[in-house]
Amino acid sequence: MRFSGWSSLSISVFSALVLAAPAGAHLSINPDTVQTSALVDLVFSVPNAADPIGIDHVTIGVPEDFVLDDGESISGWTQSRTGQVLTWRGGNIPLRQYARFGIRGTAPPQAATVLFSVLVGDRTGKSITYRVSLGVVAHGPRDNGARTLGKAALIVALIGAGLALAALFVALYVWLRPPPS
Image 1 (tube, rainbow, N blue to C red):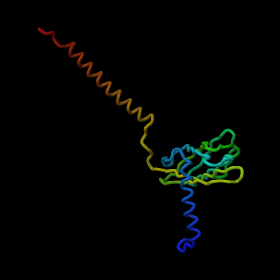
Image 2: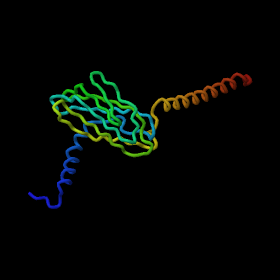
Image 3: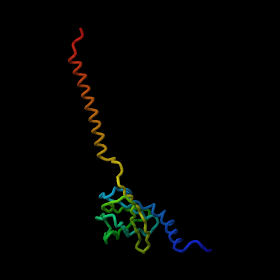
Image 4: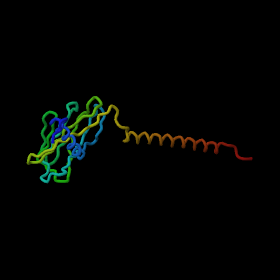
């Protein structure tokens, strides 16, 4: 069969995109969105969906505009670093299990989508490379943490103070009004 309009390069790129997209859906990053220039801890959840031997090495290639500080130390794994690349070796992710690998660094200074390359492999040399995206936004998500709870507590306190003041005025009115004749 002849593909006259397709070069071998375009067939290879198309095959890589079609075959890699479903596999990438299994590997995740948390959080998947960060604020520009923020100090962040990223956690990559790396699954072993189909390798009966078990995954024994994981390599995370960090984009150049992400300032890498360090990687998480994981019991049973040795870690090495070369520039923007962290590698964990010697552990084992059994079939149908996953492990988490954390990194710390500073997000890029401009809003963009950056791609991390995550290579997972077994001791036979078989490996898969995933491309994992991280959204970098100029304004972070709305604060749903302690500051929001603090604001709510302040509002409740102000309402309570207003009600207490109103109760005081009612009590003073009742106490100071002349007795009925």
